[in-house]
Length: 239
Image (cartoon, rainbow, N blue to C red; front, top):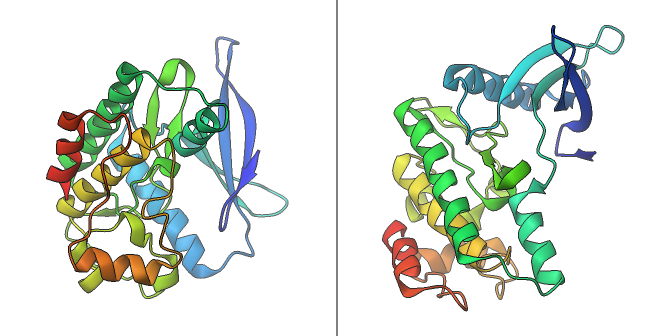
C-alpha cells in the first residue's frame, strides 16, 4: 500500500486466538538495506516497545523475520484514512472544509500523543502531519518513523538533506539540538498544517536552506485563513 525511504508497507490481517481478525500494516525493511537504515528501524522498534500502548501513538503488534528473504517486518496498527497531510490535501482538492471541532480534535489528540512521549523521556524529532496516521472515526496516531530518541541520547544527524527544516526549531537548524522544546515547535507547525489543509510550510520558498535562514532571522508562519486568532496564538506560543 506504500513505500518510504527504506520500507515497503503492506496491509494484512492479524488473526486473534478467538478467530476475529484485525487489519494491520506491515512495514518491511529489506535485508539489503544499509546499516544506517537498519539502525533507524531498530531505533523505531525500541521506542515503540518502550512506549507501550496509547490511543494516539501508532500501536506495535509485533516484529517478525521473513524466513526466505530475511527481511524484518514491523507489524503496526493500520490507518485506513492514511496520513493526516493526505487527508487535509484531499479535502482541499475537493473544496471541502474540516469543521473547527474536527481540527481541534486532531490537534488535541496529537498533543496527547506527544505528552505520552514526553512522559516516557522520548523526543520525536520529526513531528509533522505526514507522520500522523488517521484511523477510523478520526483517531489520530503519531508514528515514530525511526527518528525518535530517548532524552539524553547522543544525536547523530550528519545528512542535512534528510532534515525536515520547515518543521525545525532554530536550535535544531543551527546546532542540531533536539529536545521537548523542539518537539513543541514542530507541534505548532503541525497545527499550522491542519488549519492550512496540508499546505507546505513556507511554501513560497523553494529550497530548505532559504527557509532555515529566514527562521533563524525570526520569520514565522502566517495566520492561516479561517484560523481563529486564539488558535493561531497557540501556534505562535510554540514558536
